[in-house]
Length: 220
Image (cartoon, rainbow, N blue to C red; front, side, top):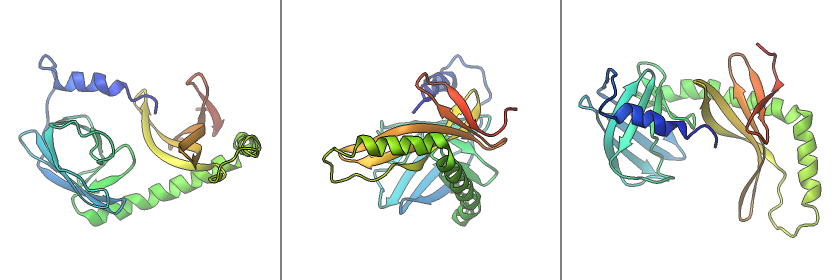
């Protein structure tokens, strides 16, 4: 995933003693539900947080400190939790009652509020997937992939599909990532990567030089 190394710079800026910024704290508990798991972020007014998860992907609880800069909550956990536990190192404040991670999962004070946020997101993702599927570059790549793998002995040969991967940030602008990929043994294979902005709706193809080319939408 690109544009994630900038997080190190953000953490240095946030947690270094010499930094000059106004540190804000909140006293709020947010709950989210995804992957058949309840996720809970409990932020305290003293700058500390508690995190726990219960259910299918539930793991060990965690604690740490946090800071708020603009609309971002940056977390500094006490334990190097690794991947796969669901704890995010940054969250975005959506409104007075809800926050969001960069996999586009929502957490709210009242958990039922998540449904109102999820519905437009699901519609957006579905519409973008339909557009990407219609692109000639995608159709050609699917044909190419299937022709290349025709002679290979693999019991798990499904056609590539468009999958939503979450949100990345480039120059302070959010892009939603959609990949043409295929699940195959022993893992996953990625063929094309698209970065989509909402307003205006633009779909960009990430090329081999890590540059983005506009493939759908008008130039602003």
